[in-house]
Amino acid sequence: MADAYLADTLDPRTIVMTVRQDVHSAGIPVLCQSCEARHRGICGALDPDQLVGLAKTSSKHTVEPGSELMGDAETVDSYSNVLSGVVKLTKSLSDGRQQIVALQFAPDFLGRPFKVESVINAEAATAVSLCSFPRASVERMMRESPDLEHRLLKQTLNELDDARDWMVTLGRKTAAEKVASFLLMIARNIDPTLDPNTNPTSFELPLTRADIADFLGLTIETVSRQLTRLRTDGVIRIDNNRHVTVDSLARLASRSGA
Amino acid sequence: MADAYLADTLDPRTIVMTVRQDVHSAGIPVLCQSCEARHRGICGALDPDQLVGLAKTSSKHTVEPGSELMGDAETVDSYSNVLSGVVKLTKSLSDGRQQIVALQFAPDFLGRPFKVESVINAEAATAVSLCSFPRASVERMMRESPDLEHRLLKQTLNELDDARDWMVTLGRKTAAEKVASFLLMIARNIDPTLDPNTNPTSFELPLTRADIADFLGLTIETVSRQLTRLRTDGVIRIDNNRHVTVDSLARLASRSGA
DNA sequence: CGATAGTTTGACACAGCTCAATAGGCGTGG
DNA sequence: CCACGCCTATTGAGCTGTGTCAAACTATCG
Image (cartoon, rainbow over all chains, first blue to last red; front, side):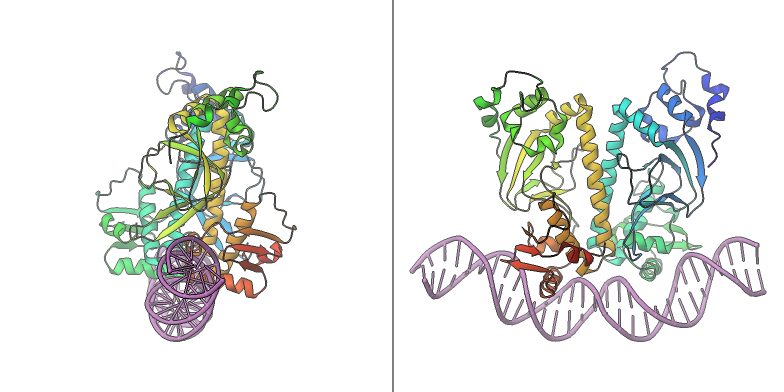
């Protein structure tokens, strides 16, 4: 969580270009140059000048799995982009029952604008690297750049679509279908370019069994039983509890209820 | 879903005002004057000139319970504001299992911008009155008025919060808690000014038992049993299957698991 | 190599589902 | 005004998928 951000922006390469507003990486802070969020994420809405401004107060850092990123009922004082890893957003009932309401992957924007208090918990599911901005900077940028708000609206609409898709999974699918849906969703998010016909695929599960249960509205035991069922039926292979190989995505999809 | 919208906007009263950009209802189309959406909804983002422009192509109309407002995989060519009544948004699995993923009340904006196809179904749960705009008009307004997009972002963020709250209900609550949560949610949405201490409260259920079941991820029978249980326990009273009276909202809330 | 955290497996219980019958609300027509 | 039929809601009886509790297994790491 160091604040060594000025170092990067003072790098000589930052000011290599002479022509302003040039084609591509002209005038772009080094901090941002190889950043995925600049292309697919919300930073893509900013021009080089704005990026330089934002980069002055932003910082990259990496956190351990399990770290709290945003506490329930805590005041939110910064926003972040997820650069790598997986963040889980959770909500809890007073008696401790928990539900994961979303997973965030790179280059998602993390934080809830226009609300001082958050009733959601954000926690690193895996090792996560983030690029964080002070709340005030983001809100100023948003006022200056309608395109930034536009991108945020688009991401929010996508998250809303995802949330509603997941509501169907939670409300209407069987345990077996839930687990298959989960694996499918992970496969697609870990490798967004994944072609349904590209078989086999393999990936690391970013969540423990307990997390998967909290995401699917099931118990650990039921998740485990359904995974072994998929394994014994030859739909997936599992190594080291975390590494999953799917021979036929279509076969997995046919078990997901969609 | 008739296209008789010009009738209203040609009404002479529409062009009564002479002073432009004036304090309050100056220059505001009659169509909009007593419209809740102009105050609490997204139309509040528009100045009188813009309102006049939008009103030219907009139309109020009323539909019967059960009418489809937006078909699965149908091309969306208009957006609407809900002026009264309740719209249910549903999603279905291929074998017919259904989940209601949201209810929309006045003055919600109805439609999914930036996507030509919708994978969601919208259906009138009660009699519904709408104010509809051609897709193109709304999108032009959005480009012209960042504040409009800002309001849309805010509504979308609220809907996302609602969806995630409901995910907890679907994934982690018992049948009894689900039904109590549902009644509480309806009570709050029918009368948004509802003070938790204002007792008793009473309202019409906008949904059939089947709809409630689809919203809660339960069966009709379970919903019915839980309602009778709440009734025999004296938490609610039910007349004519639809009219519910809650003597103590706090007592209902304590059964909702929140 | 033991300790710890995560996972799997088994036996059993129970919440909620299924199927079936009954009851109530409401409009239509006699 | 009642009789009928239709649709919706309730109630009952039994079943089953998923939860609960407990024990065994496995991976990882000091």
